[in-house]
Image (tube, rainbow, N blue to C red; front, side, top):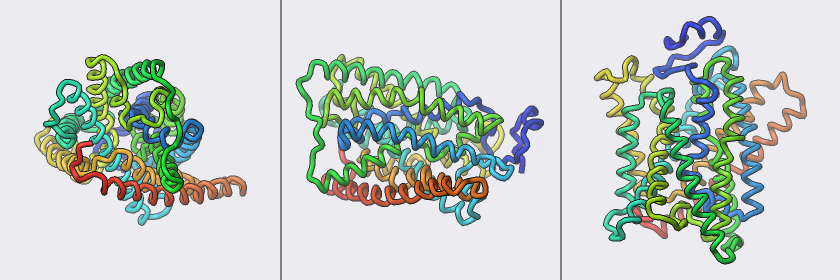
Length: 436
């Protein structure tokens, strides 16, 4: 069925079918899509990569790993983007694309993987948003009355208000500009203050600590963090908002993400590790020293950016609910507004509760990368492309894609084991509703 929300120009130019959806399709420029992707890659998660990627891997492993992860992530995302109009139909959801290639059973499997991926990413944003609020609080008060779960609850409430006020992904337009400014504030503050600390500090310890066994597990876990850093798990949903030609414009957005977009992330990750070495915190603003008002501004910026970024990764769930229950027309209609309050409020209430129960950020990054980012972004992308284009690929090209499927399949299994071990260790060390 062709969507009702295409404009007249697209009616003339578009030669592929568009599935029915309650959200907007083909309305955004490639640059807006590029900023959506860049918002994800430079979200508040970047303040943790010095501790969750560089500390377990060290200088050589961390630098080489980030560069390789950038290259393979760009390649895998390009494969998915090129399949967007497979067999003459725009696949505006990842699960729709999988179902078209493999059959109906793949729809449910892919949707489950994607939902787990996005749900755990949103948990991470709630934990980071709460951590940013707590970091700001302790700058001014040291009474320990307010704990991390309290701040996570506050973050969840603000995210709910934003979700109710922002009906769909395309309506983020001005908020993407705000997100970019907010990201620059906390990234620049973190880089400048960390660089100042690094210049004035004595020699740092850059060695990788732990026993041989624990180092193996932490290295594997860090590899999952590497792929988590660059991938959304919802590329078709973002590509759905892009104007025609959708494939060409999405490739432009990906080039923007993996060139201009990665520079701030590289900078804050490397500078943070250089300044503090093996003692780098998993939330970099907890390690830096400087004027209280500057650190407060950075933490507030990190919190606000996490609210915007969470909405991006929750949007496939919102789109599914809105489409299933026929939520169309004005966002201010009583039916539509009350539905968003109930459905999105309920979803975020559950997410907030889980975040407060188990606020182990590094564990969630590793587990998300292992369980869903590896399968969605690398295994599924290569295998879907192999199946869809098998008659057009040479034997060498087919071997290359099978090699990718096998390698990332093994990495996914190993990373899942490492992440579950990390969760088990932290669960023994910390209690539920821990104040980390």
